[in-house]
Image (tube, rainbow, N blue to C red; front, side, top):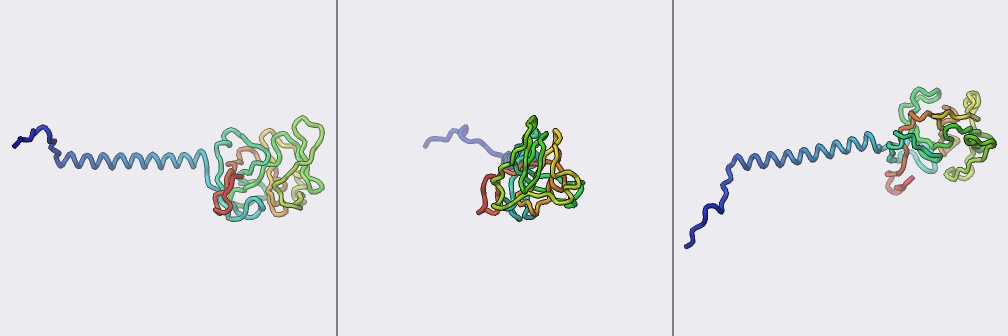
Length: 206
């Protein structure tokens, strides 16, 4: 009978096995911590979830919808006409809610915005004349008007500053927006909505 070479066997002491288990647990905890940290950084600096309250963005967004919002663009003031943005209306005269607003950018910095005859007119920077803005995102028959509050403050025709945006809801008859609150400075823009994630049957890019 061939004798076994004792060198083929490695003695594992109870303490070594315990250390291996502890090391394995620590590896898992580190991996989980990294994942949680990455998730927190993602939410704080990259994207966030926002709930839609009210019907000011009907027919494109409805009460109860949930959207994901791009926050990166806010670091560079990278906005475009037509963007749906999350706005902080705190301390603006005429707004007394805690929730953020969700509206659409209609007027860009330096432009003159005129609201007349149910339409929005734009005079771009350096241009001599106004043109009527094409707004295909509005429901058929929706017109744009300014209430007496906005007229008193000159929001029916306003030239925007270098850091100001004129924002309105798509459901013009019920939306509280720049026609009443005035232009929004860029520091009030908290993100750009880019996808509807709820309800699931409405899932789509914006």
